[in-house]
Structure formats: C-alpha cells, structure tokens
Amino acid sequence: MSIAFLNGTFLPLEEARISPLDRGFLFADGVYEVIPYYNGISFGIEEHLSRLQRSLAEIRIPLSQTIEEWASLLNDLVAKNGGGDLSVYLQITRGAYETRNHAFPPEIKPTIFAMVSPIASPLAADATKAKGISAITAPDIRWSRCDIKAISLLPNILLKQQAADAGAQETILVRDNFITECTSANVFAVKNGTIYTPVNDAQNLGGITRDIIIGLALEHQMPFQEIAMTVEFLEDADEIWVSSSTREVVPVIALNGRVVGDGKPGMLWKVMAEHYQTNKKRIFTR
Ligand code: PDD
Image (cartoon, rainbow, N blue to C red):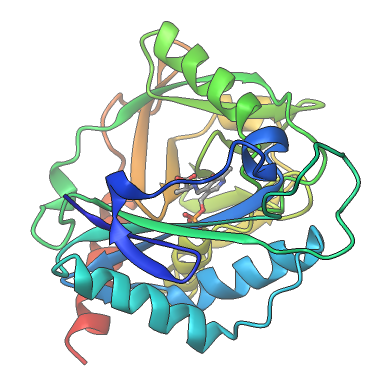
C-alpha cells in the first residue's frame, strides 16, 4: 500500500479522506502537477514546481510554499514509498467550506494532496524499440486557458475516450484548423528533416518534456521551429511525436487511420529518443 500526503500528514493512501464539500470535488477548482522520479530522484522538478506556482497564481490560490519546500515534501513522499521509478501526482484545490458557493470564500484554506504511482523504467527500456501509437484528430473542445494545469479535465477525458473508441491511443486537438496539443501530451511533427511544434500560448500547456526536447534539439543542432501548425501540415508530416513526463517522447505511426511516414517510428524520433535517455542518464550520474 502506498503512502500519500494530505494536508500536512503522511498516511496510507487508502486512509486519505477529503470532504465532499471540497471545491475540487464540487467545482474542479484546483490545479495539479505530475512529476517523474527515476531511482528515487526527481527529473525536471524545478520546472514542474515553477509551473505549479504559476498555475496557483493564475487561479488565485495563495500559498506561501517555496519551490524548495514543495520539492522537499515530494522527495520525502517518494522516500517514504521506497524510492524507485515513480510519478508523483500533486493536487491543490481551493479547499472545503460550509456551503457551495461559486465565488471564492473570504479566507482560502487549500487542500494539498500528493500520491505516487509506479512508472515503467525508461532508463532500463530500449527506447528505440518502441512500436509507436495510433492517433486521431478531433476538435479541441476545452476552455481558453489550457496553459493552466487545471484539474478540470472532462473535455480531455471525453477526447481521450474518443481515441479509445476509434482503436487509437491519443487524440491530437484542433482549434480553428490549428493543432494545439494532445489530451495529456504535447505534439511534434517532423518534415524534411526539421522538427516542428505548435507555439506555446493559452491554447496549450507549456510541457516540461516539450521544453526538454526543444533543448535537446538545439543542443544537438537538429533543425527546430515553433509554428502555427495547421491540420494539413500535420497530415503531411514525415513523423509525428507526442511528449509528456510519464510517456517521454512517443512516435505516432498512424493518424486518422492513415500511416505516418512509412508506418514505423521515424529516424529523427530514434535520434531524439536516444538523446532523451542519454540526457537522463547524464542527470542521474552527475
Ligand atoms: N499531463 N498537455 C497536457 C494537456 C497535459 O496534461 C500534459 C501532461 C502535457 C505534457 O506536459 P509535461 O511534459 O510537463 O508532462 C501537455 C500529465 C502527465 C497528466 O495529466 O497526467
């Protein structure tokens, strides 16, 4: 049984309880982060926690914790769970109050919850053997502040299920004929040797994995560009990748039932996947 953290206390996950009056439960009034740990060591935690601070500020949940304090709490949680390869889920809601009222309560007492889940060990895995996934495109029915990592994920859930219903693993989202991102990942396209990704704005999340991939592309002089990416551009791509903290960088080999490139993980994906693993090893052995 794993150990969770709830409002100042470490406890077995199955003993954690929150009120049905919690605004996270009633309104999805909260934000979250998912942070990978490999061998008990965090990967990209400062970037994740900076994004958390930004999300909290954007939805006006006032908390005094510093990035160092959050990191120390999550490191303790991982240690209490025995380390290893884990993803930490951290959720903060505006808290529980006596009545259901849309407006903020005068004094905010947030609910802070964290738990861990196992993740496959990408360090042990041979990334170049990944088979790739199928994706579909669908209209992006989410709100216009997708830069905030909010817990209100109903559109994402419906859109992800749309992929599952179509026998695919991911949905790539389209707003006004432009690609935004996926239901829980960012998206990249490769064309004629250049790596492209949609510009980061309020229509998508500034993914930490996206930033790592961009950094690696620049470091290794792989041609890279952020663009306003049309559906036609994506459909015509030689390679498509999706990226997130728990999935790293995954090749898409079929889009809307048609093969992408030659229907196998692409050449540049293999190069990037290797750079990604080498970069992780570099961090964990320094
Ligand atoms: N999702 N876009 C969306 C909508 C996401 O939910 C996520 C991450 C990403 C990728 O961000 P990052 O590289 O920082 O993980 C992009 C997490 C993993 C989740 O909801 O489980």
